[in-house]
Amino acid sequence: MARITASVYTSHVPAIGAALDLGKTTEPYWQPVFAGYHFSKQWMKDNKPDVIFLVYNDHATAFSLEMIPTFAIGCADEFKPADEGWGPRPVPMVKGHPDLASHIAQSVIQDDFDLTIVNKMDVDHGLTVPLSLMCGQPQEWPCPVIPFAVNVVQYPVPSGRRCYNLGKAIRKAVESYDQPLNVHIWGTGGMSHQLQGPRAGLINREWDNAFLDKLIADPDGLASTPHIDYVREAGSEGIELVMWLIARGAMSDKQPLVRHRFYHVPASNTAVGHLILENQ
Amino acid sequence: MSLEKLYLDVPGTTIFDAEQSRRGYHLNQFCMSLMKAANRERFKADERAYLDEWPMTEEQKRAVLARDLNWCISLGGNIYFLAKIGATDGKSFQQMAGSMTGMTEEEYRNMMINGGRSANGNRYVGEDGDAQAHRQPQGAAGGASAQTEAR
Image 1 (cartoon, one colour):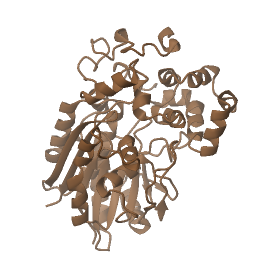
Image 2 (cartoon, rainbow over the protein chains, first blue to last red):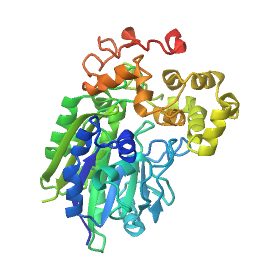
Image 3 (cartoon, helix red, strand yellow):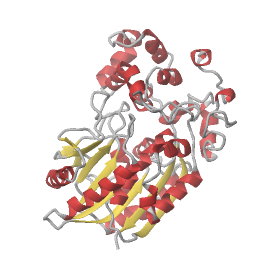
Image 4 (cartoon, one colour):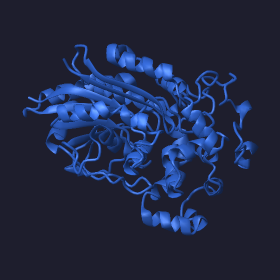
């Protein structure tokens, strides 16, 4: 049977991808950001998963205003890095795991979460920047990836509670898969940031760190945080943090082992937060 | 029953809800078209002609031509869509976000390096933080957008 052994949480700021792609990682501005992931890259090598279930949001890339799925699971063989307007990032094609993805879709949908099944989509910085942060610049990504896109662009976006419970359903689905796969689940986006209007540039270090504390120790309590609190305290785009609750919900009910924690301001407009939790 | 909007009392912030999405549908779909290199070239060659291919309002087209992102957002634009215009212009998200504050690029960058904008005074309309309406524009770039100030 497959099992989820660890979860990874990280911001997915596009400028981080650009800094990597343009060879700026040692510049004084970027050096502290990438230093926060040195441990993580080694950890990835030492704990290589068979599959990564990667929760992210599409930034008006695969999904325009024509169709806006709340939760979309990528079941394709592969996913192309998208051209978001700057040209595609020079990163490897993302290989999927259609068999496990379809199994999870079946289990989770039968468990009352209405996922949208996606058989063709390009993946944007929301998915590729976390891979770059955790894996560096390889010729190929270390393992197959199941993209799981959450709508946090057009309201209404799903609640933290819904995300947390969906994570639990994903855990159950993975554990009922008949192959002995080691699965990591990643929650990405955040932390505090606002990209629009006169309030652009909002950062809330205190709130972010309290979020990290609660994500580790009291995710059930954290899941009750209403949307408006994210917007007011962490900026309009800080709402992306609800996605971290999907990954956290997929972890065991026992307290996880905190392998790594990192927080830094700024990367472009955004506070960078990062955690690695292992199931005990 | 109309939409319940709990988020209208957050200063300097427009939540992209169903109403905004309807208002900005064609504006945002135009932005999506800029994800193709050939369309970016056509847009750059003659912006007005390219915009005229879209059933956008005249005001939406003027807001795009002015590159006034606050104006675009007030007409239903969403930043993740509007970012395609910035990308076409070779701008970063930081340059785009900063342009909405009235700060120069350097002022905005320095604010971020110094820890970003504080939430204090900026949680509710009517407080005295730097994102509040009575404190605009915030920097030396000033009202880059006459249209924004006029509203």
